[in-house]
Image (cartoon, rainbow, N blue to C red; front, side):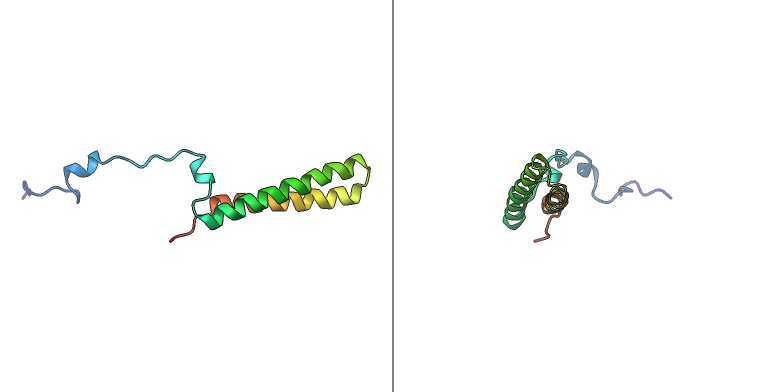
Length: 90
């Protein structure tokens, strides 16, 4: 027997017409809370400063310090990525 008065899907016909939350690709890479923004900005500043010193060391031909500064700068910029993409559940 067929149930004519009941729909097969829960939620009914109106559920299909709800607006979809559209987020751009860049919105997923940006922080949401104040703590994530703080870490995002501070680690970005420090990471770029350390990478600038890596360039200074390359100009001075101090290769060991340049390699260490580049590695630390890349690690700090990875933290920037983590602070941007990790969204805390509040």
